[in-house]
Amino acid sequence: MVTEHLVVTGKSGTGVSTTAVNLSAALAEQGYRVAHLGYDRRRLSTGLLRGITPLEPACGRADHHACQDAKAHCALGFQGVLCIECGVDDEAERLPEFAQVCRMELIASFKPDFVVHDFAGEPEYVMQFLRNDGEATRLFLVASADFAALTTLNEYLGVMGDETSATQFGGIVANNISGPFFESLVDDFMRQTGTSPLVSIPRSLMISAGEYVNQSVLESAPQSHLSSVYRKLARLVAQGLAPAAPRPFDAAAYMAWLQKWNDITEELEHGLVRDGAAI
Image 1: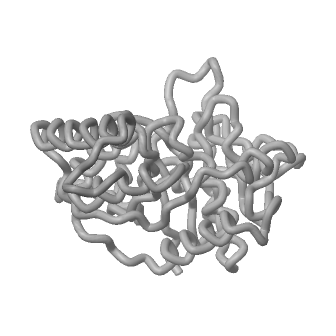
Image 2 (image 1 turned 180 degrees about the vertical axis):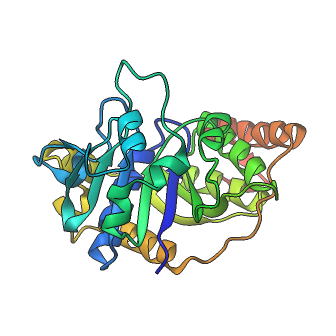
């Protein structure tokens, strides 16, 4: 099996890291060899996978330049996941190139089936980083139901609709969805843009509970409904099915869609009646 790079991204604060960590855990639980890479300066991405196992400098065990530039540190975590933190320190000016990180000797010698990259941010920043130079890469977009997250998601869909992009669109994860209203809002967004979520992850205190003991949900609550959702996500990702090309809103259509949901929200708030049906 050729190593495939799975980039989990979206607007910061939508649950990108939580999704990436539990995807890595679920893939490893299903028997795949997984490397998990974080790019945060604080080197927190791998924390829920490695628990109390400390990170160690990867220098001498990785490609010299990639290691030197990224100040990469590593450890083995849950189900044997290779945890690597590539976040630059205060002295470094920038991250190494994506292709350079992908070709680290440390990863090559591990021979993973999947490398999960936890890399949140706006499209212009993330896509500039993902100049993958031929690496097999799929992009998974995490979005919640709030305005900023959906706006960023729509911007990403515009990039994914660009046939010149070397990164393949892997799908969307609807995250932290709390109740039928927000489910309906996100479902309508997906229909209008010709997409559908791979999974819809509900708001759950189990995520916080796992963080309190420094574990992924798969490890802290393996029998929970939430773990079953992450396992489903891992199965769908591993199948590698290509979703349909998205149809992002243009600016006018997006404003009209927002106005529609503004009207619906006001009606719900005031208990108004729409189309003869009581709300």
